[in-house]
Length: 121
Image (cartoon, rainbow, N blue to C red; front, side):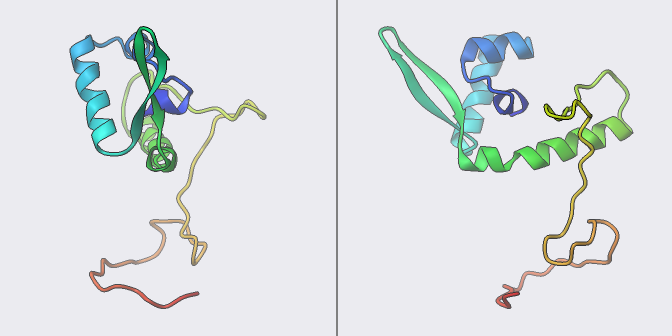
């Protein structure tokens, strides 16, 4: 997903970036396609070639991906890639905010509810 969000779409691009064997990449791309995060599109008829493009669900995953990366930087060792804002050149430091209250997630008590909330705000 990280590579798809940086603009990679073709099998060979993913393989080169990830450095994994083709059979493993095929399985991963199939799972992401089956789960609706990527879709295959024909980009060449002769020979037939397909590319993998983000779906709406795949594009919606970007904030989650960035948050997981930020968590990894705080809690895991290693040389991890970082997201950088193209315009400012600064590293992106994401935070999760509740759109309704404006509160940073994790700063207020919450509970899980199986009830459907029908109130509109």
